[in-house]
Length: 623
Image (cartoon, rainbow, N blue to C red; front, side):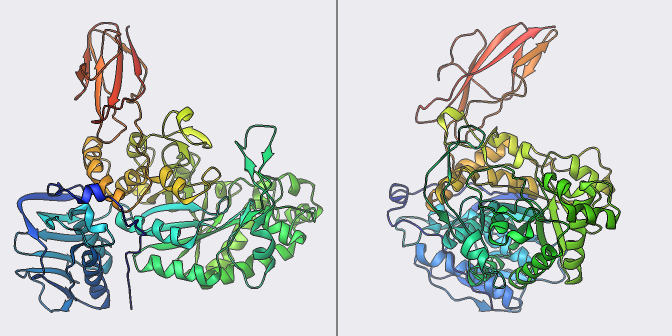
């Protein structure tokens, strides 16, 4: 039986000012935006007289109950769902109907809202759940509040929607190896995935800096590998290194991990665990040094980076250990995929290790890259034997790709293109667009991050279907994922700050095809959607970012158009072409700036509060 509680923790004083006034009816601020939408005049009003009904099995009842649970606390309308056999609309009812004859892929649904009724229908319960999330986003943001809200008209705007996801895998990763996060935050993270119709939570559980999952056969992983003596202060690429002198660590018990898996499943989200191998394994080697090439001693890493200490590929105990670990992992996580990492594995220890060299000779490996391929393929065979599939970072292509592996293409698109051409499924997650540990603004004004610069507009601009692939090969691009590496995110609030609203852009990239995306529309909707994140107490990034352009030096012949991008929801771009500093009395940017002579364009973004961004300068030259 499915049970759901919208358990995002809310402060009692949350949005008091917003709740004291009546917002205008929601203007279809849906993220991700539907494939097909017809906006209709009027609203359906929630009242104590409505009924909530469901057609189908326990899954349908669960979605209907989820709707009832959502509205109960904030509206005071307490209703229990009723079963019915009718698939038709019903006056005064909100109905969730499982219709096996309805066409569409998993997650597809139809939503009809009139002044008299609401009907969600789908061939599968996932579609019903996504229809419910759409209704949720159409309601006023205050519906998310954890207590009774006065003075709000609970209206759902009338609409006809036909919707389905473009890609079947839409995920967000969280690294808990570098920094550890409590169970309640993991649940909140999952709740936000559900709100945005994402369906995969990739849980990065093991690292050089900490092993975060209890393995009962190997208790030293929890006692030793889960804790480091201290943590680096400052950036990992800047010497001399300084440390805080404070022991740090933690791990999830198997009971807690099972709780997370069920919590996600109740929201139609799959949890994919990642157990890193053969590299990023220094924490595990600290607990069991006999699994390394040198035998140690080792220590759980205190700073960030890539370390030479990796599992010994020539030691049979290594595979015994990893297979026993995987047996317990598979018992906890029912996901089809088990993520095995496979990235950033230095080969220096293997090059000097007699056991590894003997293994290479015995297996006919020409170099250490092929030895890594042997290592991964051996783990794959074990997991395949138990009905699971491996997924790994694109380094698993090196030395020969495991026969049934799915590839996460993170070092750009090259690995994903190569894997798709070989007939392997691919999840696109390039650093250029989906690494959410990169700066979002001027780094002088931002908390310390690993580096890089990734604006909301660039995230949204990504097209996961490379032109280098044929239409048939593009079918192997099964999804997209945002990655959240937490070296420089010491707490939950900082994670939220780096993830949102960029994750909102990622979900729309995975939901809509490139031909249906519209960044201006997204930004307009996001402005309203952020009010919902306010009520949900999400510490999202909300600073002004200066306007963007593809080139800061533009060459024209007789004339040209310079296009600017607005990177901040709710702001207006003002610009000049005479070299003067722009103010809010300058020209307002709309569709593009036509230029006929050499000039310098200067532009700023301005919020309604009067706050201004840094100035963007674009130099226009004549050829």
